[in-house]
Length: 73
Image (cartoon, rainbow, N blue to C red; front, top):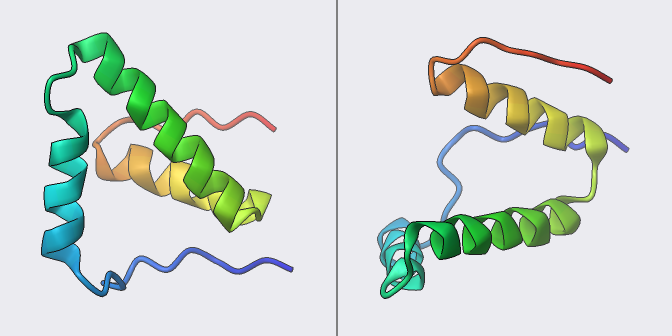
């Protein structure tokens, strides 16, 4: 079942989430920050679970970052 990507504001406490995200990185060097980001991404991807939705999110994030899309698979 494909859920589709929700790009509308959907966080119940966006300011609290942003603050917690920043706090998660406090005291970490760049490599540690990248590692914790990767772990968070994998946990959230597992929670979402739907491959098509995850691909849509990856494509959206890349495009929103102003980067060209490179899709394989």
